Length: 594
Image (cartoon, rainbow, N blue to C red):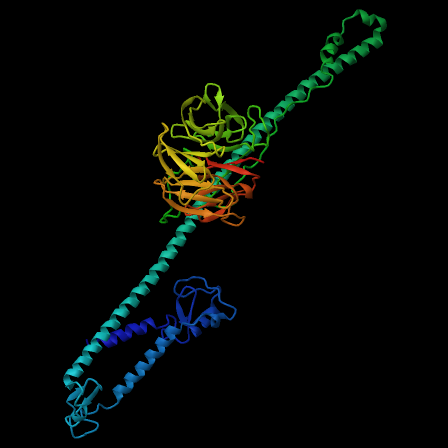
């Protein structure tokens, strides 16, 4: 144990030594990377290097206006250095002083042999009387206990020094890990940029090729048309010139001769003014892109949450891509509509099939209308319940087999009806409207994992009804904390149920577990970030992010699975009523234009 003090002192001194001058710190300054150096050493280094970097980790440092003097001081290290120097001075003085003999200071002729534990002083035989009531022990034993205490203190110091070495190694490990992560991010960003550039270059080439092909076809048609016209012009000009010459030479005898004009003029009479050539002009209109970057870049070694989310029974794309697209379908405000025309103010529900058709519940016209992702009308079918009786559809969802579940009602009854892709009724069940509050059913979703139909209904308080496909009621949720006016509904990839509530005082989104327990609520009326005004449509992506049609605020909002506001996806909408995801990850927004 004799070498321990020297070893510990050496280790402590190493920790308190500047790595530039290799001396104890003098006016230690701390850089933003938490490495410490002498003030004078940093000033000399800063004067020689531009830009200034940390000598240890090479991180670039932006010095304050005062220069190195403006960096924060390390009071702890300064105090430790001062204490170490003071200890070294005292140790040196102790070694230089002569060792006193083991004699009593009050009775020099007597040898000290005892130790008073209460007064903590050595005693001779004559001193014992004045400490008679105090506990005493032999001096040798007291010295041994003091040595044991010193040994224990040295051991504690060794433990602390070991921990300091561990912290130093941990600091170096963190620096190395940060450098590696920085490198991975740079590499991932470079690869992503290359992929985006390649994608954009390929798209540019495709578009330019289409324009070139269209231009070549149009130009060829113009040239062919011009050649035909020039041929007619040459024939007619030649015939006229010949006829004029014959008239000048032959006079009245010309009438008895045949002339090319006799056949040519009647044929060209109908072409006196050539018909305009119909040309198809190429039109380029970029698709509306997200106004923000969503999600995170997938860095090797980083953990990114993934999963398959299902909303209204169809598979989502992934909004965590770096870029994405919003497809907007605008429904005009009209009372009745011909095929392909949907009344915007009377339409709310919509979904997207796996085939890429946007299916809209046209409440005013009592039908389901299908559009392509480009907004082209495809087909429609009436929402028949029995025979010729039709119901007003409120919302529509697709199940795992591509069939449609539609909720709606007649004057006295509300139904959930399953249609196949052609619009034929496959099954239905009564939703048992009470009749006291008029329309009660709003939204429908399909939990394809459990093969259940979820319906939002408004009574005294709102509720979510969970049915089997045969109409058996298996569960009710939403009674507490109470829903008031539940609107749209979806089921995410973890089986959580997401419901919008646009009651005049709430304006919230509720999230429930599959067993009906309320996990959280978020929102609240307002126009700020994270606030909503009459939220209606809702859907989720594969990462669990929640997309909400913030209807009265004229925007679409993005939240994470915990209800934290992330960003505005798009603000270029007038009255968004419904949101849905395509299989390829495109967001479809139904803009009612009310």
